[in-house]
Image (cartoon, rainbow, N blue to C red; front, side, top):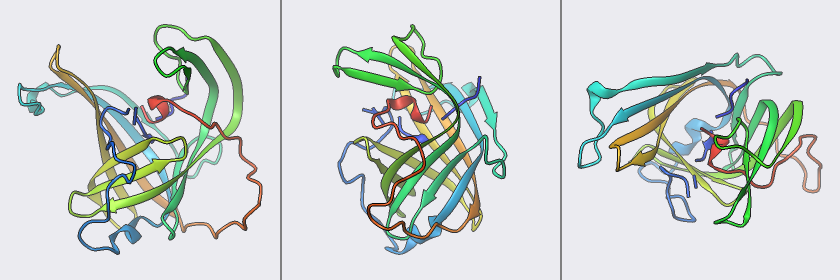
Length: 225
């Protein structure tokens, strides 16, 4: 089964989301106010890594306990199977997933709404839509806090995804998302994105123009993990 992550979460991730910011603003541009420009363009996901590890009583990861639980690779030049993040110069963007096989729906009693999963959910589901060769597009606005190296993406379904940037070059970046901290078992999970720039940001589309992509208006935290 093909794997969708952010992203997004993601991403993410109820992005609430276990490791995401809770404010509507998603943070503010810290440090150099122009530093967000380093992200302008189209970025393809090369690899996603998933880790689980133990945490101490202060919530800090225990380095010796890291265990890789999953890894998924993509070809950024393959238009039929991949994930892209687009960052426009006006601080808007798009999450594009070309790797969708199916979408599962599961009723959430707490939210009184359906959670939408892009991988088979644990514990069963209520319905499924089979959709090979479908592109999923979700729009967002973004902000970059250069002081904390956090890239916030405010998704159009009212969730905020935080990507912590651990490495950034002109053509690549690596980000991490820590989520699902369990105080009972003293464990936490980590999702790591390896991104490569594949092109410039697209030109703005005139207002009123119709997207050719199918869109899902509400997704759960499973968007990016």
